[in-house]
Length: 300
Image 1: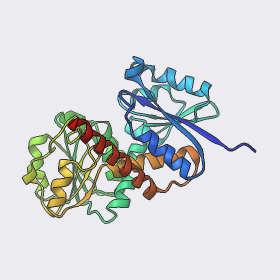
Image 2 (image 1 turned 60 degrees about the vertical axis):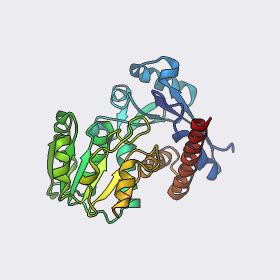
Image 3 (image 1 turned 90 degrees about the horizontal axis):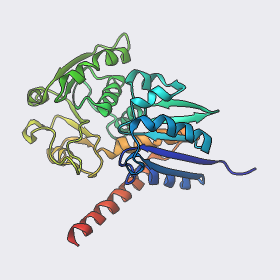
Image 4 (image 1 turned 90 degrees about the vertical axis):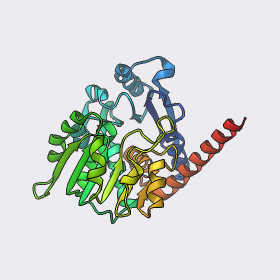
């Protein structure tokens, strides 16, 4: 019998440099799978987010097994799916589409990826009072994961507080009947005061990325009683994680969510359990190589 093979794609703008395809392919090779994963860059192809439906239908015709979906298609893709997992439906965003018997089935492994990363890296994180920075697509997935993990008070901060307000019904719907949950929404000016008594901080904003350097909160707002998580993984250690580590905080760098998301997608596609430690080590090597090449380019 011929060995089963897997063909995946990543649809989004500017995805050519993504580290997700090599991370998947390496894990596939480690499990002796024929596993190919290709970026489908809307920018290079001069396509818009609205073309995602057409690309998915072509994917069915061309024999793809699944797609990851990223910016700016995570919400619009829902209009083109045949079935949607309840978590993705609740979030109003999908980042993983499986093709099964000609049908397109949507999932959200941003949510599960953050949840599994938190459980793996910070299994004893105190969830009494958590501050979340960012209420966009990634922030909504992280907020949902935090509620699922049992946070008691979730303080969501966004430059556009109305985005946080839009999450409230979704988050209460995600909580169980016996979950004593408080949600409050604020603007960046509220961060310092809310962090004073907080037990955890999560950055789900783009601040800290190579393209958006800096700290999402003032350094003096941090304290040693916090655990601190970031979803940014390029650079591998953001200014926020570096500052928190210096204070003695337990930290969860962004690569934990990146690995969790990739591992959960790999399991959905193949039905096989990925080795998350191996995937984390491979992502570390990819990031190290990328950052080393960057330094060489700067010196040239």
